[in-house]
Image 1 (tube, rainbow, N blue to C red):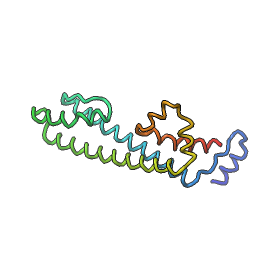
Image 2 (image 1 turned 180 degrees about the vertical axis):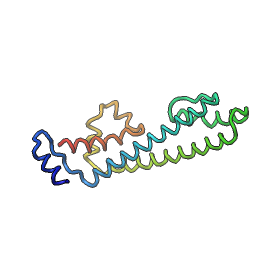
Image 3 (image 1 turned 90 degrees about the horizontal axis):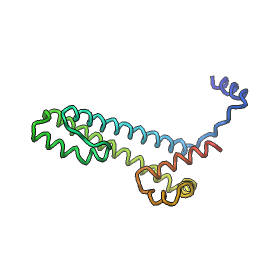
Image 4 (image 1 turned 45 degrees about the vertical axis):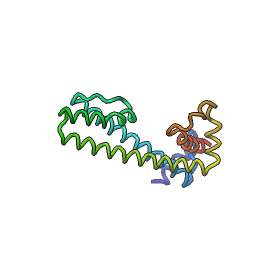
Length: 159
């Protein structure tokens, strides 16, 4: 089947060859994919909590960080006012622990990707040359450096 696909591709002059990725490039792209998936799961979990608590009249702010800043206070307040069943409060607290664990996993993957950037001069050069001067000042925001590794991998594929 592979041989047939190679033969068909060779007959198609408009199909451009794709460069073979190195093991390091594959690892980098895999880490990005894993991190992106965990971030989506974290967003789904926080949105689910926001929806569940909204059913009980508890409005929480939009955004992961804003939700985490306010949810514990809102839970305590709702518990004092008997606004939420005790079983639900316990379940929400367990869900918050799972969200914290997801965040730790996201942070660990981010650290690994940042280490890849530090080890690779080409990624460092792309990061500094492709950003405007005011963007360099914002580089410390979460995720800014990590996009460099995806950029590098995609640029290498385009060559």
